[in-house]
Image (cartoon, rainbow, N blue to C red; front, side, top):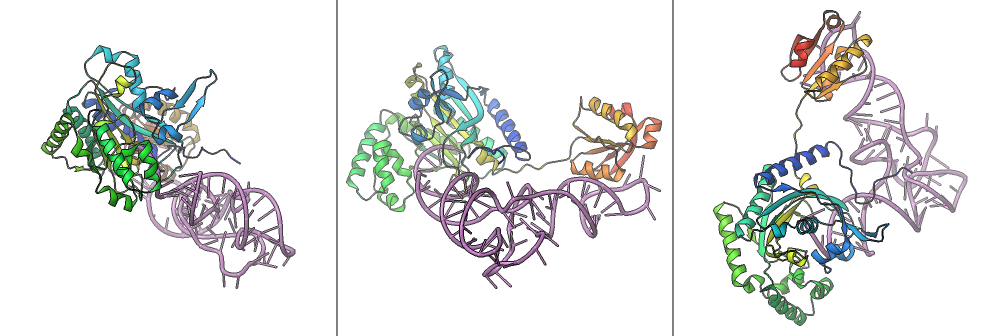
Length: 405
RNA sequence: GUGGGUGUAGCUCAGGUGGUUAGAGCACCAGAUUGUGGCUCUGGGGGUCGCCGGUUCGAGUCCGGUCAUCCACCCCA
């Protein structure tokens, strides 16, 4: 039996890899325009980092981590998300003490030991950004607009949902009220009973219909925001409206990771099945301090790359050259010529002598823009025959002209 | 971890009630009078019918198990 890729692990090969590269390039360029700089933390981190940042209550930490003891006896795990590693790096390199604003973007593999389904894999890719040191709600807005610009550049359809999940000043009192509400209602589903103890605000986005009916009467998070949270949330909406960004306020949008505060947002697609979040993020003003750094406000988001690739179309166009010969004795020359031309252009070279017709077919198949052939006549008078496969024009050129073309 | 669907050529799939050398389309390779592409036509290569076991004279087809995969729950990008 041949060896196959592990469950939930996918190869990215053409034509998908073209889409992958196109997306990363475009997203990086846009992030750079917003003054985000590239960072690449390790894929493997101490397990404790994720337990403390993502939170023990989340399923990610509870049962989805690729965790193991390495040969040195260290408890390590493959990163299940990107923020924790970037924050660790930020603190380790003492950027928190340096002060000022630091903006980073990253992309790469994340690992979660889950059952695969549509839009969900064990190894998947995220493109994310993290901004440190800027408490202004304008930064929240800028980050949302950055994500929107990336999605828009690929003509992706989505709805933007925003919410505020409060801060340590107001969230705990809300949680208390919610728990006492949940305790009074015995007919909520089993999952919600479990959530009540582990992460109560997660009940709000339960998919069970009867639960949702009950929660219509539940205390509202947005009515419990402290003055600071309320002010920022209102301002965020004003900024988005001023920029003509359509959004909905979704009080049930609570993000799964413990470290979020205040602004939470998600971009959702209706074309993806159950896993419909294509990007998600928010503010996490307490995480840096919680992980041992100087108190530093922060905001960020992550885009699920595989989910995006499902939604984008890349039209492939003709480019580059196809080079071949109709004579065996010209192959050496053709091969050498190919290497020279490749210093400046994309070129496919055929090692077998073929008929002109066969060459044109092959050139067409490889999406070359120009078919360049050396036949008997060309070999004798030192020229090359070139045909523009789009314009259907053909001509003879000297070898020198060909190389400079 | 739980539930349901599906496993036949590289890909998409046909193969009533079990019966000789397992098929199609697409893709690939080679040709269609010798130097002109994307269309058409002809030919060719390519399959342990997921795997193991059982029933049977005989299993791609029936039964059991197993593995893989997809979708959903859970969770999340």
